[in-house]
Image (cartoon, rainbow, N blue to C red; front, side):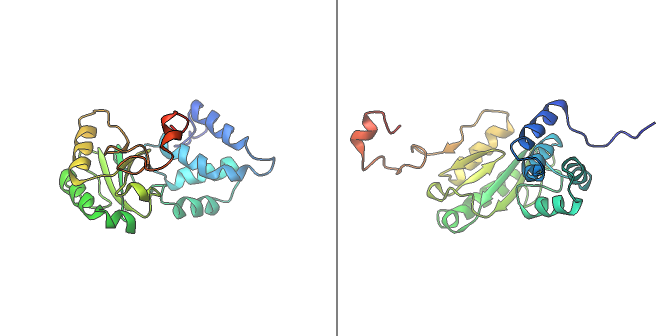
Length: 199
């Protein structure tokens, strides 16, 4: 009788893993370590364990320490259980200048937790991150795979309330803005945009 491994790919994730590995030349399958860690983290409910990293290492024929180096370097990989929704507030200078401190206070107040903590019901984990890369739409919060931009204390509180109640929430700018266009609307290339070519 053989022991069943505590972690193993689902059939769907096995196919996804193989799809990523196939992107690389023969002998370079280790280059797929990052997407495989992401797939494994999602399968495991939002975090990685040493056991999972060892599984990925064996799967890619890598030294386990090499997988751990990747998994511990990048902040997108979590190493403890997370809430259903991971709320990541950007606190870098552009977001800070546009009010990220207010966003952080609003998140802490609404959720009743501090940074790095998870709500008692397991719905939310709150984190502060460095540079979400959407500076023009600051302040920015990433929740799971979506960005919520141009936030105020009131709008992030409403978003968290809606998510808590299972409502759909529209990602992107929370003001009247087309993606990263000026808040006041287009000021140049108006003819190009009005023709529909720049939409």
